Length: 371
Image (cartoon, rainbow, N blue to C red; front, side):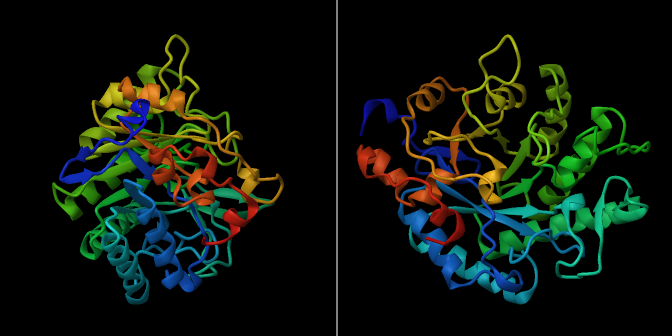
């Protein structure tokens, strides 16, 4: 093993879960689950990453059992007999290959477009009503439906545990439902779920608490959060470390075991006066493990345009010296690989062996297929 990669390829204990190394497959929507059901090709796709050496796989977003949770065609569900049977096959195959896998549970909120299943006529939901050209396009959740949605998150987590997933990740990032409550631009409620950051984090903490109750004390809960939004890369929930503390501590106290800090460039500092990135701040504030992510191992940063066809997605490999230096220094504990591991499912094994010249680039084919 290359000496500078010693920490990267050392084991890590996450509650009751032991990981063989510090690498994580980031959750990435693949849209290859017709009618919300993951098939044999999905099982093979994840199993290849397990065989390729990834320490922990986090599944693509799986929609919870709420009529307006889905926002994209052919994404998988984490409820319903057929979908759960499909995930059972995925989990079994990953475990057979020696891998560990977490489910990511997800509600898109206001980003849903009308016409998608499971109830095509259902409009999007969010913190508040939204009108476009005089038509209601997003229905603000009342308190009764907030409870209904929270229960759906808990059901999804319980289903995940029953299927044998090794952990569960709550998607609280990227301008989807939970994040819409976090962000002051999308949450203008005047009740206990709106206003200051202490109130805006309430919905998220109630989801975490319900998930913790559903899965018990031992199954690790990962919470993915971001400052940036799909429609605004410059957005911030927290402008200062003090605001980030008010945001993260309630989530930590509610039951989060590890924070997955989604950034587009892992090497950028989050606040002036410190070199720490967002994952570094999450670990410092909560004293919980953190996962960093953002253009790791690639020479081109992440852009949503890659996934809409507006930009050439090709990205070649680059060194991970800075990444490992920060990992060695304890800034964060785990590193999540996105496009790099779409481009080459053997990325982890090749890096550990020092076979950098054999790593395949991320291309349009990797983006569109389940290779």
